[in-house]
Each structure stands twice: as structure tokens, then as C-alpha cells.
Image 1 (cartoon, each protein chain N blue to C red):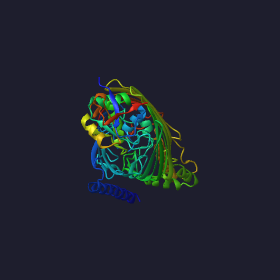
Image 2 (cartoon, each protein chain N blue to C red; image 1 turned 180 degrees about the horizontal axis):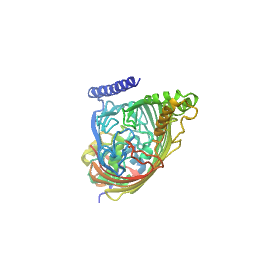
Image 3 (tube, rainbow over the protein chains, first blue to last red; image 1 turned 45 degrees about the vertical axis):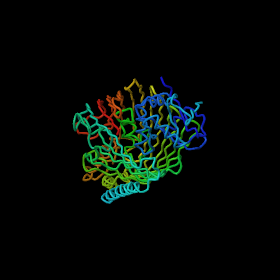
Image 4 (tube, one colour; image 1 turned 90 degrees about the vertical axis):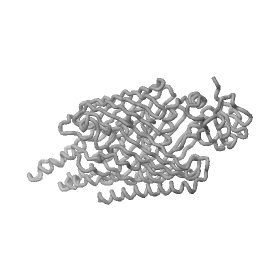
Length: 120
Length: 425
């Protein structure tokens, strides 16, 4: 089974984050990294294995729970879910384009344009 | 005066819709962040059928609805069914507009779509935002998503708490500040506004209107991992003009009538609400509970309600159980005008006034509900729920039932069975 890792741009100053900090960024509870810089989360599309693994492993949320969570947020105008990348390739392109992005990806697909975030 | 407040309600709605529509029109010209969608259309809905074993009154989900299940029809789709459409426009990275239009069975027994909210939001910083327009009242834990069945575990939010304040929105402004403390988030919100809401008369006559003025509400939500805690306070001045004739008549009876008017009339009276709630959701199971107290300082009385819900997730199924209770903190009857010493010609009138006073006081809900239900996430954007409620009415009370018939015997118990499909798109 492929391992899912959290990645940021190789140009980002972020090296380590706690699991909670990562989850808070993806759930829209914060839009900044601990150092104060902007955090732009990018999801992978629904149904992609990496996405299910990320949310169940990091946030203890199934796809249905995540959908219910975002329903609450969307339908009260409090925010919108992260931008979605339709594939790992598109995710890498988005990370390359913006040093503030944060995403999750199979470990085997990581190359020199991304840095794996160490989890505290 | 009633007509003036209705036309001002219409013109306020027109203003809100017009200004939000203008905001949407500007979106095309002013979208500055090409990466963010300028427009998005989404929506949610529920198709639900409810059966109630109580044949002499209607069970329904809100005191603002005209009909329900039981007396009007054994099975009713009016209780929970609704459709909502939401338009969101991101005008700039900081400015957005939201319009939500909802169609459900209302006080006039019609499904005419209405503007549930229309807001323009300015995100000053990622932590601080302001909204102006018709916004949601933040009294309860799921106030924001009360109607979004898909977002909630139960078929409907427990009535013992959520009926304490059946009003869901206000026209005005709000400010929200989110503070991050380590792994925890704390969001504080202030709301100020006013509103005019229509509701059906218990006797089935023309709908009445409650004018809500000088409303202010504070709410605070604390989230840390699996725990969420919520506390809120609000107050406002309420007036129900359609009750004026009753209290005018009481005042004609001298000091004792004036005392009744002072105590019970809803003429610019301060109503207040305080509530707390908490939920713990580690994923496989969850607990959720709320407590609220409302005091209207009038004929609508003071009540305290609470509920607790526990649920467990087995794959796509989430069975849950809820227990809720609402009690009256104020008198549900009053001796009214003393008949001795009245001129014989006025005794009939006095008896009539006392009866009207007491029938309204006895409408203050006292009941307990035990619910068992299951949610099945059978499709990507939809969930099916079935729920069985056993409702025990307090002595002499008809609880949250509406359309109470003369044949109704208060204080008994009845069962409600509900089937709902919630969807989002």
C-alpha cells in the first residue's frame, strides 16, 4: 500500500508541521502556516486513493464525514473546500506554480520540486 | 401598522436581493484572482415523509410551519422536505457575496421560495470578517446548517432545543474573529440586526407577525481536535401586534387588567436566550449535546430545553440515539381577571379573555422525546435516514404540536416515524 506524505513546494520555508496543523489547514480552520505565511491547501480529487488515506489517517474522517463537514461550511458561507487537483501530476504543477501550497501525495511520486513535510 | 411592517419586510428583502444581485453582476467585471472560481452554484435538499400517531394535532419541525403529520394527514411531506439553492460569488480575494434561496412549507402552507440569506462578506484578514445582509442567528451548535440535513446526524435537529428559538435569520450585520491557540481554534461572533417573521396562529386564523428589533447575539465556538464547544447569548425586543386587541381589552378592567397586560403583552418586550453545547467526535463514534434557556418575559413564557445524542459509525451506517426534554420555567396558567365584583354584563367578556390568556399560556411546550435512528450514506452526495421518536407530553401540554383540535387530549404520548433523503449538489 502506497504511503501518503504531506508535501510543500521545495521553495517553501516550511519543514515540519504537526498532524493537527496540517488537518486545520485542509479543513479551512486556518489559512496560515505556524510561521504566519499563507497556506494554500490542494486536495486530490474525490475517489483518489491518496485522498481517502490522507483524510482517514490524518483527520479520522471518512469521505462522507468530510462531505458533511464541508456542507456545513459551504452552506453557511464560511468558506469553501480546498482547490482540487484532478491527478498527482496536476497537483505537482500547482505546487510548482505557488510556493504557498501544501498537498498530499504518494511517497513514491515525490521529486525535487517538492519537500516532504516532517510530522511532529 | 401591521401592513407597514409587511411592506417594509418586502422592501428590505428586495434591497437585500438587489444589492447581492448587483454584487454578482460586478463579479464578472472585477474578478481579480483568476485561480478562484468567480461564481459557484450549489444546493441542498431533503425529501422526507413523516408519520405521526397523534390524530388530533399536527407534528411538525418548527412553530413557523402551518401543517404537519397527524391531524392534517397521517403521512406528511411538509415536515422535513425542502430545497435550497445557493449562489456564491468571489468578487475579490477579500470580498464575496452569498445568496441562499429556500423552498419549504411555511407559515402560509405554501412552498413559495424565500431568501434565507443574502450576505456580502469582507474578509479583512484570514481571521477577521464582516458580513452585511440577512445572516444566520448563531444560537445553536448547528444553527448555521440547521436545514442542511446532509450535514447533520439526525432527521431534524432536536425540537426541545431548536424550537426554543424558531427564528433562524436576522437582517443586519455580523463580525467574526477566529483565533488560533496552538492546535485549537476559537471563533467569536457578534451579530446585530432586526427581523419580521410570520407565523401561523394557533387558532388557524390569519398568520401573525413578530417584529424583532435591536437584536444582538454573541456566540463563541471553541474547537480542539475532536472536541467542539459552543456558547451563545442573544436578546431582542419583540412585538406581536395581533395580540394588542386582547391586552387592550384586559386593560379596560382596571388595575388587575393592567397588571395582566404588563406581565403578558408582547409589546416591545425584551426576550433573551442563552445556550451551551458540546460535541466530541473521534470518528468511529460521537457524542453531542446542547442546553438552552429562553425567556420572553411575556405570554410566550420562559423555557429550558436540552438534548443528548450518541452515535456510532459502522461503515456507511450511522445509528444514533437522542434524548431531549423541554420544561416551562414560567406559569402555564393564570387565574386571570377575578370575576367577583364585576358587573354582570362584563362577566362573559372577562371569562372569554381569561380563556384566551390561558389557552395561549398552555401552548408553552413541555415534552420529552426519545429517538432512535440510522443514517445510511448510500451515495456520494446523498444519505437516507430513518428515525423513530417517542414523544411524552407534559401534563396539560401539547408540546410542539400545532393545529391542535378541540378533540385533542393534552399530556399523553405519541410516536413519530420519519424517512428522509438528504442530498447536496
